[in-house]
Length: 200
Ligand code: ATP
Ligand code: MG
Image (tube, rainbow, N blue to C red; front, side, top):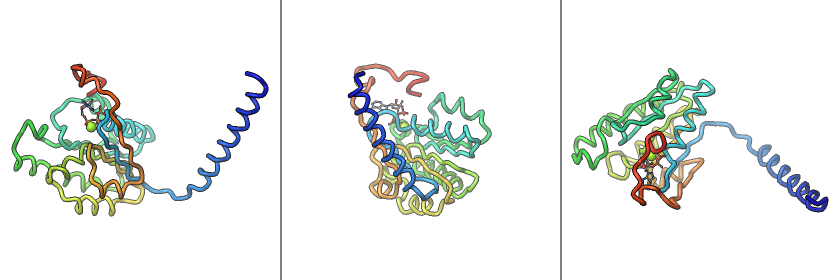
């Protein structure tokens, strides 16, 4: 690299550093966060489990509530349930298009949401993941006001991650961090099967 390019690079990095340092100094508030991972692209649940591993790594108490996906096997669950700091609740029924019964789905949702409410009130849970919760609101099995109330009254130090497509507008408004996974391409659309250890 020429001296000229080197000095320009150094200048740009110094500017970036002072900008980042200022942003870090400006961030004063410290509390649990509400994060929503939504959109049609792959990675919502994966990102949530990645954060679960991150929190467990520090010995924090974590709860994961799996709406919809109850009967599916998944590798992360097999691995992370070895950790006694992880509590897990899964909805007993499978996908709604498998059960095709609104009443039993609604009852399963209610039972699972009650477990979620207990976790959202438990100060020993540093992180609570509500995986695929968005569909419960979308299908009308769960009332948005009830969800908002439980989120608003959770312990101040507790963070919550909600995943799923088509997140409710009010959840997006309430969230501190919203990530929209964009689908640029998905293997499934080229006829490729979901892959063990990669997709589940
Ligand atoms: P993942 O669990 O892989 O992080 P996700 O949570 O973002 O995916 P979901 O909508 O919950 O996505 O999808 C559940 C399953 O469908 C996963 O096995 C995932 O790999 C697969 N999947 C995710 N996105 C797509 C897509 N755009 N098209 C087809 N299948 C998808
Ligand atoms: Mg998912």
